[in-house]
Image (cartoon, rainbow, N blue to C red; front, side):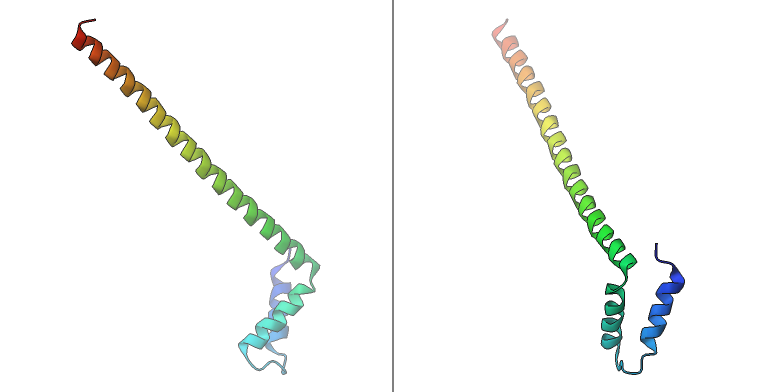
Length: 94
């Protein structure tokens, strides 16, 4: 993992580079420094992978919730059909 002092030292290096005149230039330079860091790249790739897995998991969860809702509706429909059938039999006298 990347430790805090190393991250802070990069910020300090970028903050005190005299050629960088504004915040956008400092951010761009910091981005360049981070792109060269293998730890940063590994962590960034892992973040992308985990974000994707989370999105897939949430999509699957929503799919399962929808399936459950459909199953509940089908069960209610079956109960209603049975009740209607019983009521109609009672009306006819069976």
